[in-house]
Image (tube, rainbow, N blue to C red; front, side, top):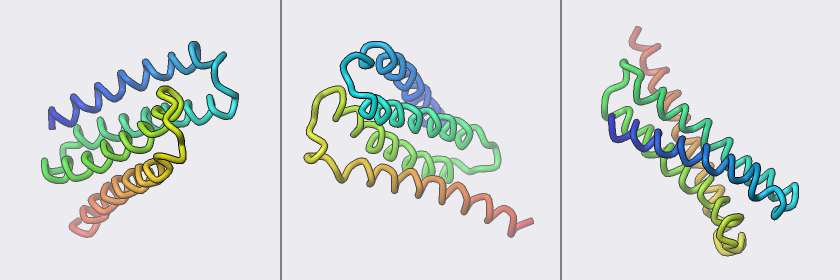
Length: 126
């Protein structure tokens, strides 16, 4: 659990840094559309960091449940947001990594699906 919380904290810190960097340093370098894509990556990272914090502090989830959900969310953040950062910060051609962003999105969806499954499982038990 503390490993997942530590990863969430680091990802949250990175999101703040990249959000500020995008708002200030990239504003003059990127087109408005590119800057919006970059900010979308930051926003998705923030939202899923908050979800990671929730999942890993929710006392009714077992360690196994927390880890399973967290692994999908962490991988999803790295692939979804990370691929967008690579495109705009390191000028990696989007055509070279086009498949990583949607795959990251699928992993985020799976994380949400596992969260839903675990809640439904508890509804059925009660």
